[in-house]
Length: 441
Image (cartoon, rainbow, N blue to C red; front, side, top):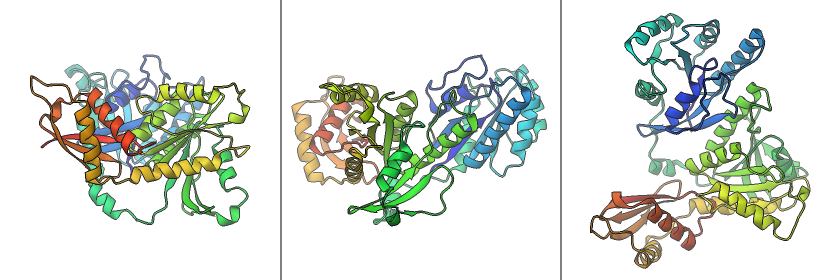
């Protein structure tokens, strides 16, 4: 099960900078103007072999101070309810403000671990000034400079300690219920037709459908058992953009969608044919790939698009350009309302589920892949030819392959891409991320 950390704090204390630092990438837009976080930011951080979800909650900008505080309070409460741990950010430049006090009061009542993180502590003078934050009464306090990364290692160590040691994938595989049903998460922006798709799939035959108890407000688990097909559908609240919706709702649905993604085997990403794929969708797509989930892209409301000769073909080509580098993904044009190709979507989802579980016999793997290596050799390194001698599939949840060779560290990305394409060509792995490892013979 996944571990989720939410970053909360008033605007402009450096939440997005820390978020980027934890994810080791420039993903959130960072600016000195408060309230810049528009799209919800979420991603996966990796530290000392442990991975966890990170959600950046974005500051609020409202005209009236009271509304402002009320909205922030709502967001903090949701974070408290949904996340496993909280990073509460403050800023040594401005010292303790009324908003910090109000937020601290909320957080102190929580049973969840709270890491008070004092940002912009970049020299000794600032360190002296930062000591006033001890008065907020939190046990875990960290002094960092999110910009340079100073102090963030200690914070990450403390978070990593809370995460149960990842069971090795081998152990996890042994514990998997062999008869467990495939789980499909329906994910996408609001109003792309997620509920319509769910209703179209199970609507009329509701009698054969049991809603599984114990699920909460926004993520609905539905047991589907029709036409000789059986699986669990997880319907998530839309992943919303801040500009469009009240912050609390959106923040809620994002955390829920990430949790649904963690639980699912295959992610059905629904997009609106008229609007195309949005940044949020690409964000979820890359998150699904990073987490090793199967992916099917469903272009909904296709009935409303004016058709020309190559419309679907052209649309698919443009879509794959945006999804690159992982383009071996099934794309289906559906209409939930007209029930066009919705059962085809389920068939394809089940195929992707099977691809993800595929185990390839070592003899077949070596026959195909060593031939591919002979056809196109890896570039020579420092005068030595790279020799790949043997390939085997690893016992993991996501299709992973180990290539044994003489210089594992010298194999460059283009050659890795070539090997991945060859694997896909020979052993149908459509819709599934593939992992390659290179090891010393």
